[in-house]
Length: 252
Figure 1 (cartoon, rainbow, N blue to C red):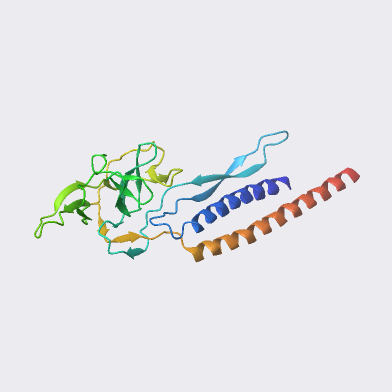
Figure 2 (figure 1 turned 135 degrees about the horizontal axis):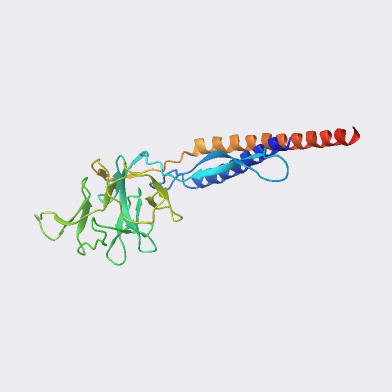
């Protein structure tokens, strides 16, 4: 009976981790560029101890690979908002001054005159440096990822190229989330990586909505609660059955 209990407990632990992740997704249904990046795989793990090695525990094997399937398009009309198409990701600088990547595209000029996301991360140029556009200029980002500046004081002014964004095609690598929500190559330290075989592509004047769906996540959470209750009931019944067997063995 205890083998069944070990299996059920392992499944319950996995269920609790999935519920925690569902709560995280629900909290980010309105977060620009949010990507789901979590799943649980169950692996059998033998439990050693006294007696025969016949007990196995369902061990959790979490995976944080980012799902880059494009989310919904949010038209903003702002020339500094970008939607990354296909597997394109944007290079930014995290709090530890490392290169990391994101699908968030609300680019603005910060108080230091640098291009940054609304959340504060510096937006990097193709060489990994900060982008400092000329002051008091009208800025825009082309679909090729080029930042342009136009002098509003001139009646006829040609857009001047300021920098090219660090855009990478992630179709050839697996990305995982870090604690700050930014991405890095799976199993490697934060940093730049070689772009994939596909051309990078963005659409300006748009943002990407969250990949988390509120209704889908709520249904997942409700199913999780029901599943948890059923598994707890099973553990209790297996425990009661084991106690009954032990009693019979003592009497015999």
